[in-house]
Image 1: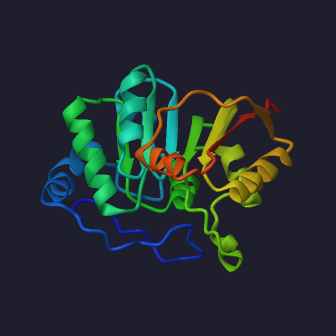
Image 2 (image 1 turned 60 degrees about the vertical axis):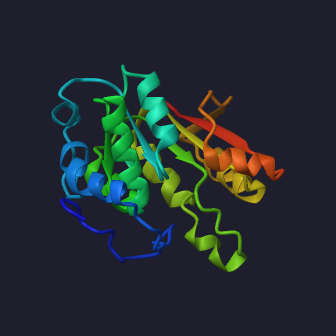
Length: 224
């Protein structure tokens, strides 16, 4: 893909790169729109003021999928800036198209592994919020080690969130919801709160139709 570095192959990944079909319009977006709305992975911290040409709170979303919810949230909150992380080409292309169609100036996309982006591109205490909506639940027990939310991830999130910043997760897999709850509840750096509103995703709507229970979890970064 033009202007991007492909996700690396180091360590245990919380995703699998599936060979989904990229439509011609998505490929055009990858080729033509990523230079405008994308951020290439690099091992240096982003200057948000330079990225968005203003000073505003920044929220990072891990796994934006096809981008419908991400674009809705950014359009509804023009006072806030958003960075979406997604590794799958069709999803990145789809979100880029929506950024252009909606004329969004407060949303950028990175195509890379989320943990590496957080570690190498986000300064400590820089984020106002982290979104993780419907991550891969890795349901088989032998694959649980691939789940993104583990104690080291909570520690990383605590480093990158500003005091009072939030982590908002949603999943339709009850056992994973319990794991997320347990990991963040056991951290002295977070306080559990009532979840805030978010748009319903297409994935979620399908899951609800199949009887899958959806659970949202919200944790605030404590003042130290």
